[in-house]
Image (cartoon, rainbow, N blue to C red; front, side):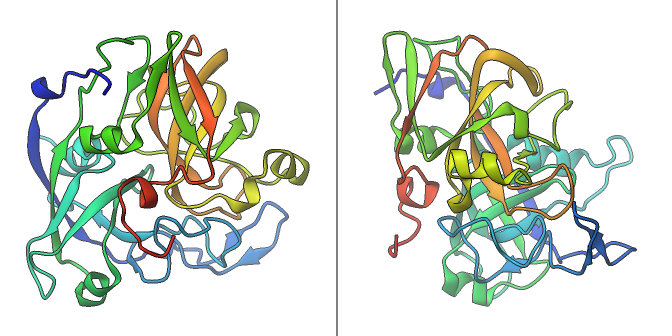
Length: 296
């Protein structure tokens, strides 16, 4: 078992509500090929998409798997501060519990964060999703911010709960953290989300408009919840290109039609010196790691 400082990190409550899907003023989205289309996107309860399902090829744009939550309470001193806390403090693998409505008491798992819209995505069992309605409240036991690897401090962790780290079960060998991933991705095709000052919330996108690159790296079968390795990407303080660096994240929303966008990736592990060794494993998905589905 990898040594961490889990006994020193704080477990604290954050809360959000199931949010409605939204459609922008223009209604149309303009594709990278110049075609206007009308498609579902962020928010809501997405009944037929969960972690473990393919994240590409849907008639959708930025669609989020499972249940999307947001905190809409405002504070005069800290506008959006409670929503920011939900996004920053929630970690992949955290327990989420419905605290009102017909699904009260049912539990799920945090599986992603989406930047820009600032949603947190939670995976619930299908029977729970059928009971949920828009504006039902979901409490999360936020646990993971500040988690460190005591024997390999060169690798920084973000958005990782101790439970998820234990489920992934990476190993340290020859001074590198060995992490299972389904795909490797070149930094050259990473788009929206670059330039942020931190990776404690949100994601950034795999642009999939170069067919040759997608075929070379086998990106057509990316799934929600897949762990992926991004080459030459340093996420230590925001997201930058750094040759030799490597970051690992989790796929959190679907592919997109808009230029500069694509399947979103929330950061989990990063090393500016390449102290992470990705191990290709087609089963490297949170649905399998945390036994969220029986049909995979």
